[in-house]
Image (cartoon, rainbow, N blue to C red):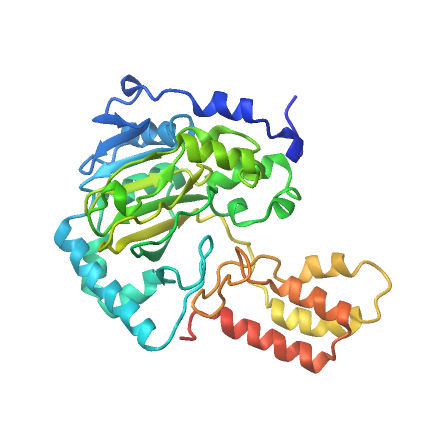
Amino acid sequence: MTATWFTAADCRLEDFRAVCEQKTELTGYPHATDVAGNVLIYPGDLPNTREIQGELIRALRDGPGIVVFTGAFAPDVVDRATAVFTALIDEQKAAGVRGGDHFAKPGANDRVWGALDKFALRDPAAFAAYYDNNTLALICQAWLGVGYQVTSQVNVVNPGGQAQVAHRDYHLGFMSQEQALRYPAHIHTLSPALTLQGAVAHVDMPVETGPTLYLPHSQKYPPGYIAFHQPEFTAYFEDHHVQLPLAKGDAAFFNPALFHGAGTNRSSDVRRMANLLQISSGFGRAMEAVDRTAMVAALYPVLLSHTGSVDNVIAASAEGYAFPTNLDRDQPIDGLAPPTQASLMRQAVAERRPADRFEAELAAADTRRDFRNP
């Protein structure tokens, strides 16, 4: 019988092992050139055909969950982008900006949040050369169809930068176990189909520089968004992960449900730069545009004396999700995601804050989230 809800008790390590210890067979993927550490390796010049898209879908969904394209981005194109990203990082440091991170201590590494639009505005010609990339279009169309939305975060792991704890990615991967448990099982199945994760190597990444650690096939474990929080699964990941060196211009793409985490940079002089691509389905939007700030400002005085369920009213009116946001200003300093409008409203009602104070807090939150604010 198919589960309707997952619990921590559903996470059994022996079941996880049975999934993850499958072998990736090259014969099932005729356009791949190799299998390394159970990861499929593809050339970076494949044509964009329905046949190849289908093969990549199977690789990400039913196979190892990760593919690497060698030479996907031309080195000179990468170097132009690297120059832009390096300048942005230098400017952040000069301004005293100490960036937060989802899975690392703030300031440990160098981040450029919202790198996509910053890149386009800083050097439109370099942006066009970089994103005019057939491999990127191929894998995005395969996993998400048309109308996808690209976002980018540049991550530089400096010498001595520590490995991340194994995790899954956005959406449910950016939640605590308690939060993830509130979503029914079919949403756990849906979440990986909403985004595609990618990383473009901007420098050569031998293993000592700490390229990303992966656990092939782990995306197929149904309660994995609960399991990755549990120590026995973390220990298994640490003992069984694979780590592939990448050359500048190589690109890895993976199912967001794959267990993974950045590795420790044990080099003495390599600043490991990757452009982390998160591509989202165009379907992740409501049908109507709604002015939720105006709604909750009008509702707040009513909720201070409301005798029914305040939570029900907040759920129907306030923005209950932290993303998208301007991560330069609205950073995940105290957790995996910034506070939501709904959580702000809930706390304000509980503390009986004056309406004018709540409206000022709403305005400040909107300012932090607005991409037009530097």
